[in-house]
Amino acid sequence: MRGRTDSGRIWWQRAVARGFAPLPPPHTPVTLVRSGELRPDPVDLETSLPSGGLGVLLPTYVARCDAAAHETALRHLLDALAEVRAARPDLPLTLWLGMQYGPGEQAEALDRLVRLTEVAAPVPVVGFALPGRGKLRTVNTALRLSRPLGHIGWLWTDDDVEFAPGCLARLVDRFHERGRTGAVGAHLVALPRPSAASRTMDRISGVTVPPGACPAAACMLVVADVVAAGIPARRLADDGHVLFELLDPDAADPLHDLEVLPEARGSFYRVSRTHDTLRRLRRSLYSHVTCTADYPWPTARTYLTGTLFHGLWPLAAWDNSGGPVRGLKRWTVKAVHLTWFCTVAAGLAARGAAGRPLRHVPWGDDGDFRSPAAEEHPAAARTGR
Image 1 (tube, rainbow, N blue to C red):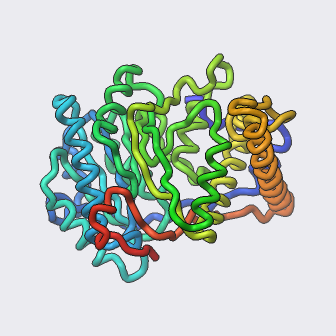
Image 2: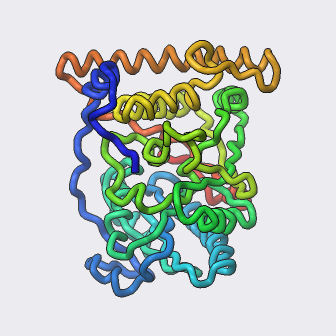
């Protein structure tokens, strides 16, 4: 993996990097649940689960939605995995269901995992409950628990994604066609909601699509080597970590290890509240800034000019695809984005110079949960906390 190194960075990258020093994640107890029963001993996993194959991760948390919506999301994922099993019966699959919880919610978290792991499934399901927030803690816990099993790859998804028929089976097929290397993701459609924030983001995203699509962790299959050591606390997004680890600035196509498969389709709803949208954008921006500060300059430069600010001339090549009006709209949005990017970077550099680095960036949103899969059962969805 090309990964983070201290060499190859220029002065402003080092200055910005010093301004972000997240606290290490706390060591918290993890409770395992298998087949409706609590399993206090993780060693039991080595003898009761298949080795190799793919790990499938479904992260969620108690306040995300009610128990009925959690069951709907799980059943939808299991149906998609049944298609994978039918196409590749010899490929071992293990589903890891992470349930985070807040103060006073442990009993509810365990109760939900007990009921969820009792659901008839075409693959083994391992539930695990851990206190606190932060999706990356769930990701790293699953990676640690599964390490003895030697998964060859990880299929990550979110609890609000609806898979079109054959979506996951196509991802798995393509992953094998590529020689089980890199990362391949589904073509995800973000569905707008009636709110002004949701409609605005839908219009903006329509004119800022980069020339090379990058897999999103909402539905992505990545080779295990990329995440074998876990995702560092400095990373604010799991797909951001994968992107920068696989980006190859020396290749004719720097994104050759990353692919979005048009035939594998899925959908989800955008957040609807302005507050949640801004929080998600802020965290995403900090992810962009910290990744470009941490990785060697050739990698950072390739990402900035070829992906993040593509179309922002003269920083990057002008993009006239779709006509001059669309190109001007793209330039305008990217210019605003660059201004915000530079503001965040300057703020981190000032913090680093003052010896007061930023320790924490709030998670994206606590918005309302509404998955396409749950639309058939409206009573199963409710507003998250």
